[in-house]
Image (cartoon, rainbow, N blue to C red):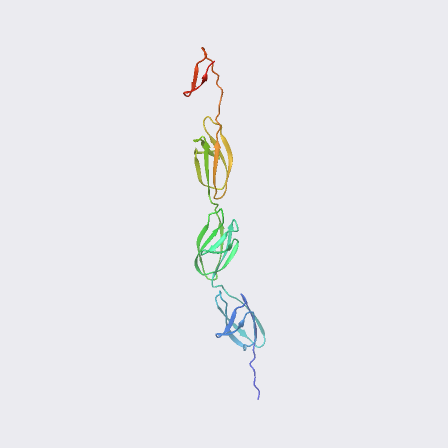
Length: 243
């Protein structure tokens, strides 16, 4: 009497990612990468699963001892964001949780609508709502806007005329709000005083106060009267006696 053993096939199963659970009809047969030598010739339906990925069923047809190699890629059950920003190095928050700094790739984002925030010092935070489907990869590039600054111009004496980049703005004290970071040419003048000009650099989100001291322009007046000894008044104030 002879007992014949069924002829089994040879299947090498690899997956992306690795360490996926492989089952047949609900029974576990191992973890990838896996060499399967116990399946009889014929067609079999295998289930491949891994946490964070959508399970996948694959059908394999084994014939005798002919080796078969099968590679299977699983699709993530969550979304992925590939993020860049200008400037780089900005912090990335997804639903309020820090997930790294740009440029970066953020995986394992639950499908649906999420809140993305990108922020760095000296720039306005960028916030937006993003809808991700399971397995979707979205590329997001963000141009961050510098925080505006404030420039306050004061003068001694007050009521000096203020020019910024040769454009008249008003009289001191003068406030330039929501100014872009950069260098400004500021000039202040006043009747009877020498004008003063200088370059003022305004940083991102900074508040700068510039004081201009205006020197009075003076002259010399010599008065001779006949007879001498007359009292001289200028603007109602006594300033001397003639000779």
